[in-house]
Length: 379
Image (cartoon, rainbow, N blue to C red; front, side):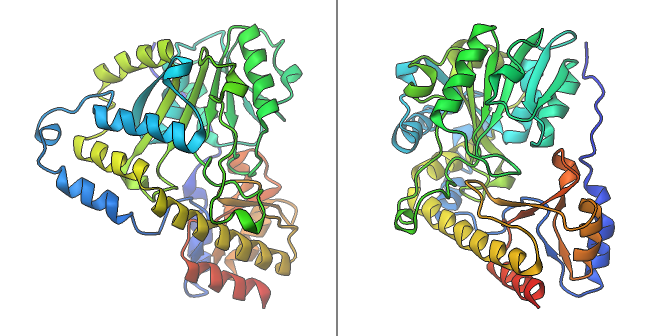
């Protein structure tokens, strides 16, 4: 069986007409794609340069990553997430960005015809696309933490969790994650936890801004019971370190599952380039630059939320993540896309994420763009 066909409304060419309309206003303020605009940390750039002629550059790099990278991942989980990977029987493998990992996850778990993969109804579109290309069936539920909505569905093989959520910003509690893990194990399914925005938890007070916490991790002892069995966690450096173009992400969790997927990844050639592995190692160890970036995102979210409220939206600071998710003022998201384009502003249509009555605004934009949008929205 090859890659199966897929269908999705997630097509950025549908947004281009609104960018074209916005250009008539002057400078286009584009908050649609969550693509970072800030500089890559200097530590990362130096590490990349220093490794440009290493043996891991002119020779083939290891699929599982260098020992330095693997140790950096283990230390990051221990110091940042409070998770001892070795203590819970977890292994790791770097991935060529998180989208590749998400899109191929169902296939690498051998899901196919007759199997079901559960996901949130409002969520990142690639969960559904990945399930479709594996040949499995997508089942969408309003809330994956409501385990009764899926635990008795025949054929469930995997459950996607996303906390903080793209696009809603919702953060699941440790108790909710624990319930998901228990229910999944009771039916022999795997929990797939996309935690790419875990460093961006906005639920704390202003006093916590200098040392922000992370959102609960699916691999925490209190969640997985001290055992990584049937649990996989995905994380990306794209947002925390502005490394989207480096394609640096990882899977951590059940050693048996990670090892099996790694064997396929070796044969397919899904390998992070050697110098990029060195850059990823540096990024995982550079906590100061991450805190700086988190501060930028927090300030931008506050500014954009305030401006959207001034325009008439019911905008609120998300619990986590990088997006403001608001109900459209018109009949659906496309009405608002048209009206906002007249101000030179382009958000992302909620239809892409499962609800055409909403819009998503990304703060992976410059301070200047956020300020300009605030001025236009408040006029």
